[in-house]
Image 1 (cartoon, rainbow, N blue to C red):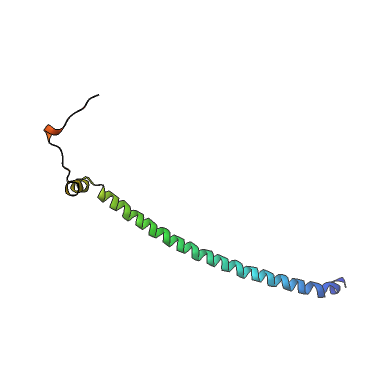
Image 2: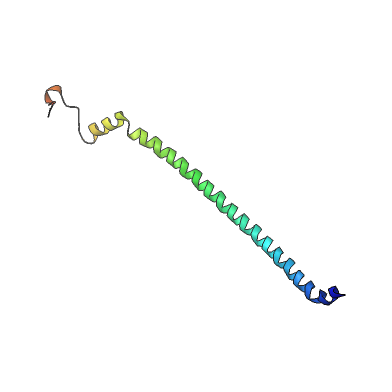
Length: 92
């Protein structure tokens, strides 16, 4: 008989608890999807940056090659290797 006394109070409380937990589940799934979308965007950005890094490393290796440096020194700066009689060896 004690159960019937608390039934009008317990039923709405349980109903709101069920609704509250359902809303929390929906919100948690929404957040998980939102975070997953952000993760995928960041992964794509990381992949793009890694490709750029690879291209920059290739470009750096090209520009640092001896032939390219020597050609630029000859063409743009009008530099050349010194002749043997122009070389002076300095000893301390």
